[in-house]
Image (cartoon, rainbow, N blue to C red; front, side):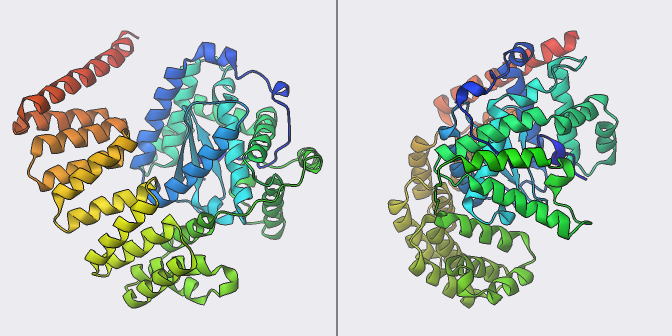
Length: 475
């Protein structure tokens, strides 16, 4: 069983509460480990998560999840630093919070949610763990230092996604990791705090609070019906009757709030099914759906799965029908993608250009347009467009990767390596960033200004490396 399933597992029960009922955000914990230390450990974990084969680096799904998460964070009664939401390709119904403001969501959970309020309830609960500083507070009683205990947590997370049996064995036998797991799975108090804050957060954000109750009851029904296939959440955190009664009582006291799912919710579910299933299986699944099961979602999934199954005419037909049914950024992005991949490059580029004018803030369209221009051989146009988008999103690592591709196409090798280094810096891949900067220096074709920037960044990264190694060497 993957260890991440028991790291701050989702407890989908939530309750209303006034901000004054919640404890402080763990001042004692923060005194034992600095925000910087926790963020550093979080970055360490995320470096490995991004390198894992199950990390789903899909801009469309990630954009949707972060938009939903940002809406919830903004509605939280306990303001918090920026939280990053990411997707793991795993059929298990689960989600998990990590040190430093990172929340992972399994594809299985997104597919299991029957409406957007159920998914919002899960994210709200995990945000509750983050804002209440549960990760740091949960290890205060350990004999080891807080930073060491959090590092043990990082080891357990990394092992959960490792194919190396030695790494997994090291984590399993680690006393810190096991103690961390036991404490997290047995701490009902923290789960209730996250429940209360999560419910209040989702209600403030305009979602139906009953979504939490409905989703958890659905999981419990699965447990009763399929005793040998218990949902991952229930394996890691059995539900108590007292907690369920508390949830239902609190939700009953809240005002009814109807929430209409966004059009993107069903499309994202269709995208996950189409991308994570075998192409032919997905194609058969969406071909068999009826209009009553969501015509737009059917078209979306059918277009994407037909494209993967090399059924090109049907892919185009479904994508074109989708944009007639639904005017959305996701629909436009899909149609352009299908057109480009079926040999209609110029038409796809024109489609992207028009769509960006309507949806200028939608990142997947921007990424697709830059790549399509490069595919057309218009590297100068792509470069100008990427530079323009960087004014909107200056820290977007994908834009720096695209900038590197543009410079490569133009034969500007120093600028290419500098841009790739900037991407690695934002992915917290310092050794790779240093390597790219050294290549930029060796290229020698960037002029005085570029070389000055390269030298300055190289000095800064090496200074950071020396500062971090210094304290470790003295221990």
